[in-house]
Amino acid sequence: QVQLVESGGGLVQVGGSLRLSCVVSPSISIFNAVGWYRQAPGKQRELVARVRGGASGDYADSVKGRFTISRDNAKHTVHLQMDSLKPEDTGLYYCKAERPFDVPVWGQGTQVTVSS
Image (tube, rainbow, N blue to C red; front, side, top):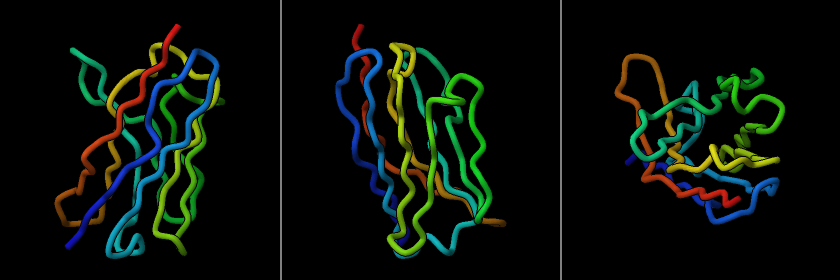
């Protein structure tokens, strides 16, 4: 059974850092793309960052230079390092795994709150 489990969210002050983790089971290797999305209250879910295969990540313009996505195939995990956090980064962060010709898989989400 495919499952994504996120962790690492929390409450942080402006300018602080958090590191999110997404563990993919049974194996990250069956997915060609894994990414992080977020949804703020009253807003649509949006892409934050995504990594495909061994390529470098794709980032939303709003997080470029502050966030870094990385993929650890040995540990079946994708991390999102978030630095210089801003209040507008607040939201529910979801992990999403994709592979061709199949329905994407989502995690349950982890809350990130940045206080000013």
